Image (tube, rainbow, N blue to C red):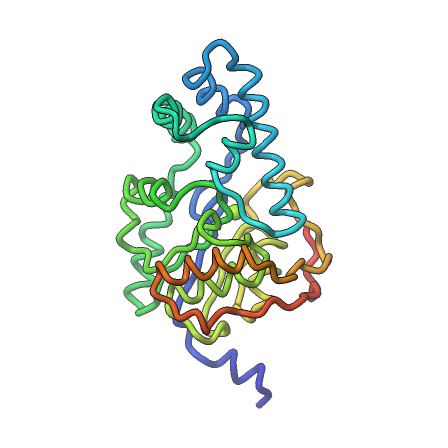
Length: 266
Ligand SMILES: [Mg+2]
């Protein structure tokens, strides 16, 4: 029996899910309209211009994630658009923004019975999401939909240095669910490059959920090599995240250039 086939016989310890388009049904969202909800509260007189700047800043952040696999935060997007999130009016604007997003964040009704079934089988459940949103926001969404208590570990890219498909994002997710051997975990996602290629590149088993209408410009770069050059400030962010999670820093993965093993974004 080969080493690879032996690994495939080992029992699974955890299943880690992508969020958007996987645990939630895919929605095509008008992000300019969403940002208008924020802008009309934050700056009623300049709302249209502000919403456009916010939409553009968010697109720039996602482009950096797509091209360089670097993570971004909501605060970073706001500041890039000239918004001061420390202003008192930000809180009311943020509430309006979250309300505008609400119809698009509902958890798929199949998720709860699935998570329960996995846990009944002794499997741990994880989440790894490319997101600019905070853990607090994601957890409020999961709590609203009654699934938060059934998630054993979650990694939101807004808390770390890199986004999927960077290996460090997946290694952080494995740490969050307490899996040391990547072959003992399954990743489930709706994007061939970010999810399937990324998880497979660190040795995880993968499940592709092809239900999302992902725009061509969001599909990643196929077999382009992942950019994994180590950058001190990003590794300090990873170290802080690991410290908060109680994860030993000596488990930090080493960035290694990946090649795309037969995965071609559709
Ligand atoms: Mg997704």
